[in-house]
Image (cartoon, rainbow, N blue to C red; front, top):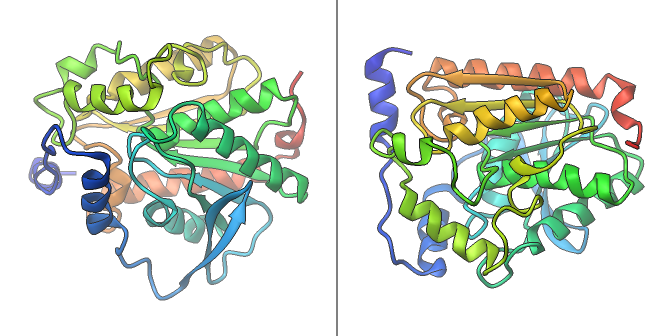
Length: 300
């Protein structure tokens, strides 16, 4: 990726104004992302999963064994299964594996741990149907995927085959140095914006609780992780520290850091070569994990 491409990609993004209501933020986010074309080979089919609305993301030819449970981003307060389908569909297409995107409850109306409870219920239903599951998520959805793995361990459920985490938000206490050091470089977020979302999500609870900020949890026994992040992110340290903690806990972990790339740069597939390459690596990870029957074994 050339410097010009990086700057052009970052130039397509701008920080939003503070003080807008959740409803205003959701409307703006949906206007930008909820109507993006997915391709003529994609069909979205509404369903209920774990008691919550969801979308089966059906890509022609993607009928391999297993399923990708996709958890959308949006700071736990915006976004939907439909916005998550923008990233789930390319992953399904590249892997040949069907995906389902979940509409988990959003803060501040439904603060932590509502999203974790919804994700766990959806995951349990997929397991009960006999499917082998890979998790994937971006931003808050990436943090939620990690929290789901911890919640599954608590509940005595098998781990997923693996998890793909795009720019995951793993620390809602915002203790990472990059929250400040990358603030001027990140075209999307600042500490103040992240703090607003974090306050809505935790609702006065401990932001370092392990299911809210899974970075601080004991990660022992979790399934393999693939983490992808750009260097132009206030959340850079959320990924760097997660990779270190996972390795220290003897979890198989791979970390991709793309220089100059913005938050969830995978949205730029077809425009940035690094986004296309990241998708290829994520797809290879998913196929490899689903072919490994060890992913179905319960933990502990």
